[in-house]
Amino acid sequence: MSPSVSVVIPLYNKGLHIERTIHSVLSQTYQDFEVLVIDDGSEDEGPEIVQHFNDPRIRLIRQENRGVSAARNRGIVESNTDFIAFLDADDEWLPEFLETIMKLRDRYPDAGIYVTDRVNFEPDGGISRCRYQGIPQAPWEGLIPSYFLTAGLSDQPVCSSVAGIPKRVLMESGGFPAGIRIGEDLITWFNIALKYPVAFNSITGAIYHKEAENRTAEQATSENWRTVILQRSMDALSNGDVPEDKLDDVREFIAAYQIQIARQHLFSGEKKETRRILSECRTKILKKQKFILFTRSLLPGPYPQRGDHDMNTA
Picture 1 (cartoon, helix red, strand yellow):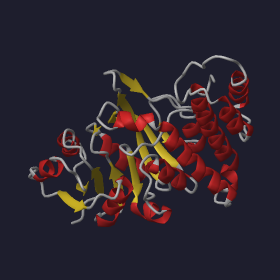
Picture 2 (cartoon, rainbow, N blue to C red):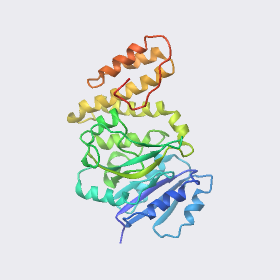
Picture 3 (spheres, helix red, strand yellow):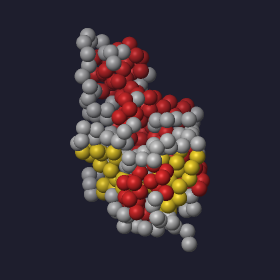
Picture 4 (tube, rainbow, N blue to C red):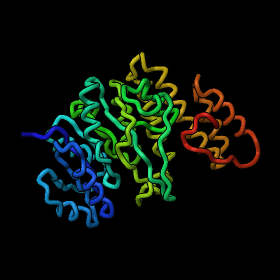
C-alpha cells in the first residue's frame, strides 16, 4: 500500500545537519510517509549518513550537481504519492507538522499550498518569529486572504521547509525553475498562488536554521533573489498571466519588492539607482514609504538600515 505523503529533501553538502533533519521526520506524529533524499552531488559525508538510517521508508537518490530546483523536481517525479512535503536538509520539523498539514489538506481541498508557521534560529544565536500582515493572530487556521499582499508587505508566509503541495499542482505549475540558485522557491509559490489559495495554520511546524553554514552567504545576496522574483512577477503581469481578481494585489506585491530593492541601493549609497527604481514603482498602499525613500535619496549622508520587510517605515 502506497504512503499518503512524500517528503522530499534536497541534499548538497549538509552532512552536519542531515541526521537531525531526518530524525525530525521520523519523529512525526503522522507516520504514513516516504522520504526521498535527493543527493545533488554532495562532496561530504551527507549521503553516507542517510544510508545509515535503517528505515525502508527512506530512499537516497543520487544525481550530478544540478542545483536545488533540479533536486526538488527529481523528488517530485520519483515520489509515489499525490502529495509532496518539502524540507531543506538543514532545517527540522516539529513533531506535529505532517499531521497538521494533512488535516489542512482535508479541510481545504481547493488550496494549492498548505503551510504552518515556523520559528527562525538566527546566526547570532537568537530566535525570531515571522510577522505577517493580512493573517489573523494565532491561533488561526484558514485560507490566507491575499498571499500577494502578505508576502509583499511582511514576512513570506510560505517557505520550502513548511510547504505541502499536491503533486498535480506542482506538475501544472512547472515545478521549480532550473538554473536559479536563490529565490527559486519564491517563483514556485508565486506561480501556484496565481491560481490557487494558500491554506495556513498558525502552529509552529518547523525550525528554520538561518545559522546553518551557507545561509549567511545566501542572505548577503538578498538583492539578487528579490530581483529574480520581481522580474517573474512583472513578466506575469505583462504577459496577462495574472487573474483579474488578483491584479491589484500583484501590483502591490511588485511595488513592495521595488521598494525593498530601492532601499538596498540607498543603503549602498546608490541614490540615483534608488530614484530610478522608485520612479517605476506604482502603489496605493505604500505611497508613504515610496515618498520617504525618494526624499531621503535626495539628502546628503548615509541611510540607516532597517528590517527587510518592515513596510510600516521606510
